[in-house]
Amino acid sequence: MYICVLYFKLKNIIIMDLEDIGFPKIIYKYRDWNNKKHKRILTDNEIYLASPTDFNQSQECNLPIDWEARTEKEYKGFFEMSKNYHNESESFETIMENLKNPKIRKEREELNKNIGYDNTGVFSTSKIYNGKELWDNFGDKQKGFCVGFDLNLLNEYNDQEQNLGTFSLVQYYNEANTPKVPPFSLTTEERTLKAIKELTFLPDSFEYEAEFRIVKIYPKNRNIILPNKVFKEIILGNKMSEEHKNEIIELAKGKYPNIQIFEMKKGKNEKGRKQIYPITIENDWEF
Image: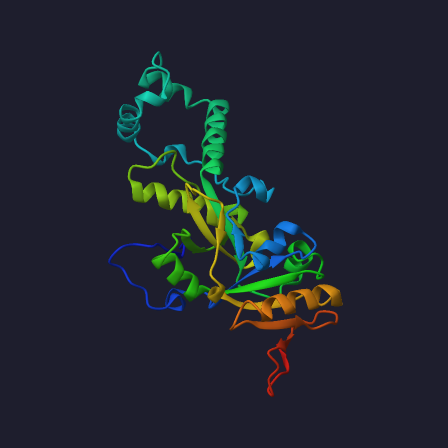
């Protein structure tokens, strides 16, 4: 059984602290300072709500459909409701017979997936700042940087000013027990939950990413500008050049009043970090 931990921006529901539902205090985005688009996260406070096609992973938004999850009565009701989307020459009986064909089922699955890709934006982050694979894969092989966002402040911004979308922890499943989704949804709430499930369930081979996502259905704009106050930490890769370190430190000091800047500790298998701004008496390695 999988429990998808979600937070929806709903009227008349107030959650005082996202930690109460198992969310982290800070979420981390790994970036490459040599990439002009990646730099914009600090130079312009810009994040990007990516389409699942940008992830280049076949497991994204690709849960199998359970065609037997609906009764014939439910199929009939859905057919009547969505006649405009069907070929007029096709009867309900013909469609039901066609859906028994594996090839046609596969074509329908691909169609639904592509529609979902076009109408979805995802901001992928991690609960951890010290994932070696994350630094290697997304942080320019430890020569890049990592930005930590205060999740409670992001939530306030989401609630008061900018509807960023749904906050969700990614759920990891054993591929021998891959969850399925129904072929269609009967209510708006079910449709939203189905979309979120497809976008936040991944095989446990990706569990090392400890991923946390912000998912937006039908994003009007994929480029989102965040306020300075949500930027909590900047972490510099242990192989970052001194030139790039100095550029980031000078930029952050003049822009983010409450920022803390850390440097990852060098050394094999080490996962600690050292605070380098602001300097404190208690400053030491953290493990």
